[in-house]
Structure formats: C-alpha cells, structure tokens
Amino acid sequence: MPILRRNNKNIYFPQGASQDEVERALSLHQGEEALMDYHRSNLENPLQNPDGSSTTIWITGVEVDGEIYAVPGYDRDARRKMSPSESRDKWLSTIRENPNAFPHHRSGEEHNKWAQEFHTIIENTTE
Image (cartoon, rainbow, N blue to C red):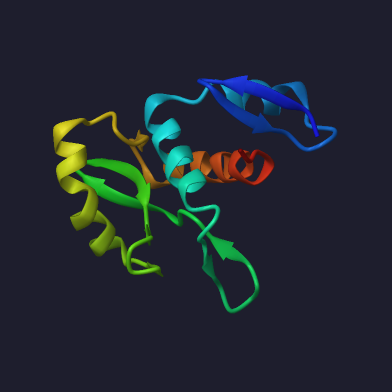
C-alpha cells in the first residue's frame, strides 16, 4: 500500500489510488483536517453497527447562522450516534470561537456533495 507523509502522519492509500484522490487527500483544509483527526482518533475504538460496519465520526450537517457545518455526530465518550440537534449543541461553541473549525457550506446540496467526496477520502486513507 503506498505511504505518504503529511504533517508528521503516515497516510496510506489503497493500491491503484488515482493521482486526483491522492492530491485531494493531501490538500485537506483546516476544518477537514480536524474531521480527519477525529476519525483517526476513533479507529481503535469505533462504534460497531448492527450491520457489521464501524462508525468513527458520523459526519452530520448542522445549521449555524445560515451555513451548514459538517461536524462529528459520533459521541465517542457515550459511544453512540447523536441527533443533529445534539451535534449542534455539542459543537456550537467551537464553531462560534472559530468559524473555520469545521467545513461549512451555503446549502444542504453543497454540503451533501462535499460529504460524499470527504467520505471517500476517509474510506480510502488510513493512518
């Protein structure tokens, strides 16, 4: 599996990853990097779903001041998925302190498009 170093972290790419996939994963914005770090920090202790899959982040879109923010919806302390309102409550002070702490978009459509792309990055890269 190809390995690249970024910010003192190893990033592993599956065999056959395209140049575009590698470049996109290496060009994460500040808020995306925060989400990736949250995901990585839960790799050893994910939530096991009934279908056999694992949850490490559960990205949820929450509205704050007319923008849709992508925030973690997996509560690692309680080991459960949070509702959108719980996620908003949990991360609102972080967003207020730093509006760029998480990715944000002008519309739900834009958010959903971004979330699909980012989920692919998460699935295709591990530390």
